[in-house]
Image (cartoon, rainbow, N blue to C red):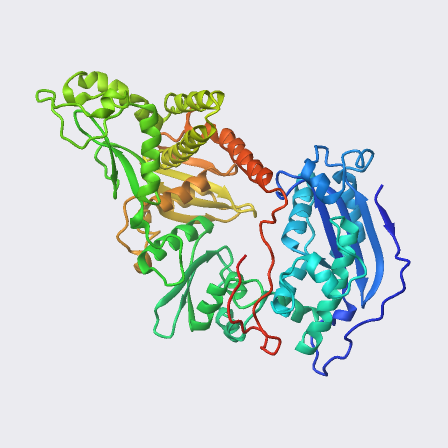
Length: 617
């Protein structure tokens, strides 16, 4: 059973208590910290499980209590994890499951009472705890978190320690407990590191919890000075545009609450260096209010494509996408094109680069003997076949050996795969993978597997876009959480009208009143940009919104369906492949840490918020 035990060690004296007269916020000596450490069966919070929880509660340098329990993960513990932690499968026999251990830990931690959670590499430990709470149906309590890795990076220079691992920092700060990959001992070592960091932070002017949280995320003076830019912004869904002193757009974003999101750029919630640089240049914030989050997402993409702000990365160059086209010829072939036209041809994509498109084409060539030459073939004027025909890689329509009808049957599985059924295109690739594996030709099997995964992903994307693009008109509604409905009118994959029906407002009556403005309601001067009728990023956003379980179809002109043998049916197989790839990587180097924390190259006399360079692990 989980046990709470009071420490029998001598009480430690409070450290670094000398404060300035103008101290604001909650003093660090009065804050209750719960230092936690976990041992797990692996590094993925979704796929792996907790095997041990250890925690120490401290305040003012005094240990108030300790918590430790083994946890039965109800699954096997990998051998390399047993070697690393010393926790064997025999040790967890009779241990409580996470369903019993997590409530005991939450009661000990008292997060709802204002305690602060501390961990070394907090995203790892907090991520596992949140996932466990989610699996059990618990609502994870709101709390503040301190990551000793980040705090150490801001406080200690590289000249003092080689890295910010717990095994390095614990002896540096004179911890009486040596980290050994057991939860309670590692939590005790983290307590020593935390107190050692407090001694460093005191002379640097960090005396309160707010200052600690701000310092750990490194809010620059420029960020603090620009907080007034968010003062008069609306608290509604929409798009915001940061502009410089010349009125040029710097960054475009969207949010369900514009004011709250923009305000985050001036606080500790925004850790990205690129955004800190943008905030330093910004002098104004323009906004476009929207009816709901979908309209905000669509407007954001249109504005980014039109304005191309300096600090946006996604959606900035939509014209770089390419498609694979099945040409309209007597003997069709595959061609990489820059635009998708309404010419009756089948298209596969979009792809982010020509190389990605060519990888998919090669996967199709592995299955179907489609011609690869670019000649304009005529049945009445045959030409000599190339070497691919002799190798059985091409059906060779060029020399007249097959008729257009026979060649059409050869390419038919690809056309069916683009529209609905992918089995005839994918199954031969899986059979080849099995054959190569049976022959112990594993590298070739891996290459074919990777091509199959790339092909299925491209087919999923193609079919998702196709089923929305072909709709002449679709009206859908999603609940807003307050008894009302968020409405969207979609034509050929593009949003043409967005509205919000508050609680008690008839949806159909509202749509009737807005029918006259359906063509122009969703466009204004700011986003009148030369875009395709159905830009693929906008269509993908709409498709994801329509796939949400709560969305309801109100009116439909056309067919909106997903056939049973469609590419999406292969999603479980692809997830299985992804898990096997991750397992193989861990098996090659089971003790490698994916992110080795390192200190920043910043002398101790440099003021906070000023860094010579950023170290990204």
